[in-house]
Length: 315
Image 1 (tube, rainbow, N blue to C red):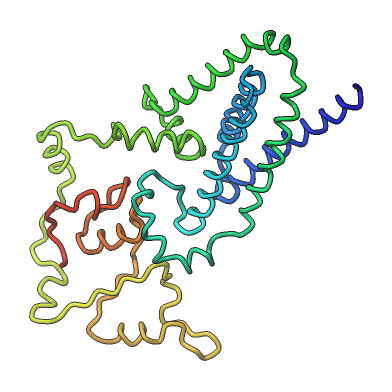
Image 2: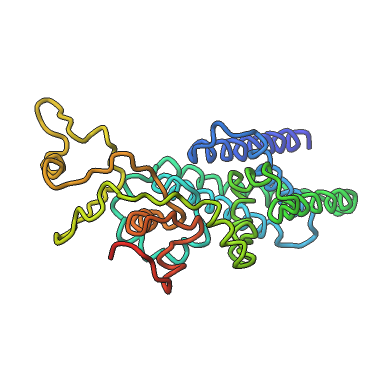
């Protein structure tokens, strides 16, 4: 009996170490090393409550349910890491409708995606085996004893998630957690998809006109490039992930961008002060911003969300 308890405690410790290591590893891969420890604690607390709830459940196959939930959270974190490595943001429900576009970037995605992120998937069989082994040793009396605490823990988790997702007081700190913590991020993302984002809802036409009037820029009599392309063909070249420092530079006598350098010498306007302006549409939103001189919507691709609109921009 003592030997079993000792082994069980070692397994308990190993499970906790694996869970914490996975959470830390995930936030490192998604660029969260400078974020508050609160984010990681919420993730660990969510997994811990699920573990505690199903461990003391009297359902026969609760270990399978927990293993499935744990595997689902792990897979979600893994896909987030892969997506973040290419697009520098976490997955969204909106990306479900853009799965067909992965075929286009398949080769690039394979190069950028970190193979080391697959480590997060390796512990799933161990967790399933460990949970089943532990649950088989929990007697019925102990389940009855911890039942009230189980309900308190479950209610606390439920209240935390609902408060974070709904954010009734519109607190900036809660918004920060929703954008950083993996579980509340996806639940909040799903909530916005179903119910809409209350921050983006337009109330009346008067409200919109008031905002436009407040942000209206002064009219310029003569713009620098107005009419410069009249009677000419216009070719727009927009390059993804090209940094300005490479233009006009050479390495060991070899030009880094010889063709672009030639284009810049004649009949070309080069915009070298161009920054990333994208929403969930990524590359499509970058094109939208250039063609229409408008900031893209933060949610979804503008070309899909507003495909029936008429824009004043380049064809």
